[in-house]
Image (cartoon, rainbow, N blue to C red; front, side, top):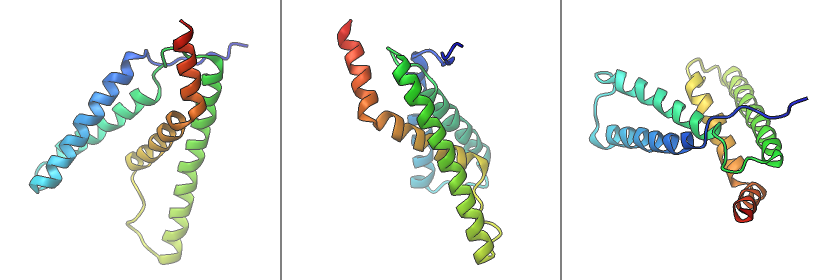
Length: 140
C-alpha cells in the first residue's frame, strides 16, 4: 500500500506566506483607517478567501525533504487539528444552548482559520519536525 500523500510543491509555501502577509496588512489597514465595512464588504470577503487560500498553501505544501517520518507527523497533527476544531464547535454549541445565544456561532471560514492555525502552530512548532528537516538538509 502506498502511504505517500500528494502535497503541493514547496514553492507554494512561499506564495502562501506572501498572500497571508498581504491579507493581514489589508485587515490592519481596515482597522487603523476605520474604513466602513458595509461599504467595502466585497474587499473583506475577498480578503477572507485569500487568507484561507494562503493557509491552505502553507499547510499542504511539501517540505524540502519530506520523509516518511514527517508525513506520519503531518497526518497526526492534521487529525489533532480536526479534533480541536470539532471540540471548539461542540463547546460553542453547548454555550449557545446554555446561554440561549443565537448569533455567536462562528462562520465556517473562522472555523477553518482555527483548524489551520492550530495545525500550523503544532506541526511547525514541533521540535522533532524541525530536527528531522534540519538533519535531512545537512545530510546533502
